Image (cartoon, rainbow, N blue to C red; front, side, top):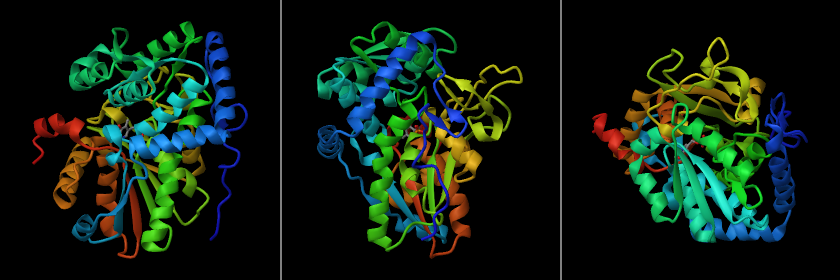
Length: 402
Ligand SMILES: *Cc1c(COP(=O)(O)O)cnc(C)c1O
């Protein structure tokens, strides 16, 4: 098999750079915590005992390996490529996020830290973190914008039921990016006993590296499974891209395989104007946000733009720096679909396969629905079904999806 020249062996470099992107843009007060974290992570990732313990929890607590399911009725309906679904929706707590939370939770314990802080937008990362805190017997505080708390009341209750404290954030737009600022502030103040459990491949080095490594298991399993099911590598991988963790988790181990095309799907929202979507590569430009240099949706004057997506998990103005590099390199293609297309994709998967997807992976499915019919029946497509749709039932219902 031909291989392209790629950077998987050297990305990120010692300064946390993926090509020109990434790095560590933090105030002096955060330098010590991130350097301490980097050292601890480097030691843990090469420690057999740490890896075995994580493997055990991923298997017996979270439910790995997740199946790779041949979606025969959807394939037939579309009339083109063979579609396979990587079933991350079947994991405990209903999404891929638990992979990263278990990894960082164990790392925090190893560092002797008994307290976790996390940010959350819709509450999915908060619930996964609260779950791991309960499992490992740790204290947990989740920062959440007041606006989001009102919109996501069931998840606020879940976190509390799991024993975590949910701290309302009243500053700024009272949403995710304000919650991240507060979580970082808490971390700096309480670093002696606290780990900041960041939820995607964002933030200062080593987070984009570390979170990617905890999600690589998705692609490692998928590779083994498709070779077993089809006897060869897939032609296409599709995944939705919010911060970019489920997508890089699926893509990473296929990057050296030139024959495997990869498509990252962003939120096109309700229109192309700034403020109406979260398609960073379509409407953003390079800049620094929350510790990393990457593509950011911003105004002419460099102010962070408002974003919109029907899917809370994709509604963020920046994207993981490794995706920025893969975009620049042309190794991964990035596209976007609208709110309406994602809703229609969720309806179609529900009807054809008996699987109600979350709105985030419904974006990836919408891109497959658009392109699958134009592909040959011999083509193989793997879609990352990053989460289940239970959390989105209210949105489906009020949008009139039936
Ligand atoms: C949070 C979330 C996402 C978006 O986050 P990434 O880091 O881009 O993966 C996607 N799907 C689901 C189900 C989520 O909960």
